[in-house]
Amino acid sequence: MLTERAPDEAEMVREVADQHAAVDSSIGQIRELLAAWRESPDAAAQGALADSFENLTEVVSAHLDDEERLVVPLVAVTLKQDEWNALGEHARASIPQEQIFLVFGMLLEPVDDDERAFVLAPLPPPVRELWKMMGEPGWRQYAVQLRAA
Image 1 (cartoon, rainbow, N blue to C red):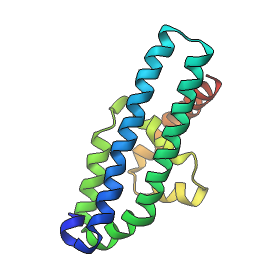
Image 2 (image 1 turned 180 degrees about the horizontal axis):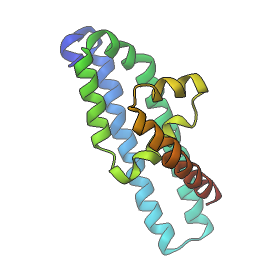
Image 3 (image 1 turned 30 degrees about the horizontal axis):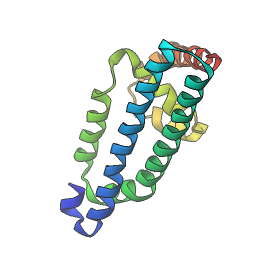
Image 4 (image 1 turned 90 degrees about the vertical axis):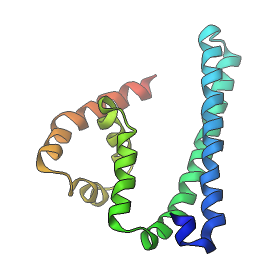
């Protein structure tokens, strides 16, 4: 839709979209190195895996920066509200139900109180209460275990 409605920006949109291939490639490399590390968890395999995670962090960070800086402002003036909502629904549908609170925790952790309130405000009250009672504590427990590993 963006390339059709904003043809002057089509090259930029394609370049940012093409970054997904670099992310996929980095994830594929991690999967291969993780399998090798599981078979032989030595220092060399650990180092290669750590380097691959560093690479993924760089690739994803650059991509997300470009999306926020270049694509999101274009989306804001190009897509209609119902199209934007459909995009969000598509993204949510790709998250397994049992992981939804973990993903939500990952999204909310780095934001400040005002941004968190902005994200939580449109949720129905029962969902906000579920997040507060189950989701947030579950995310915190998972984050502690993740960081300890």
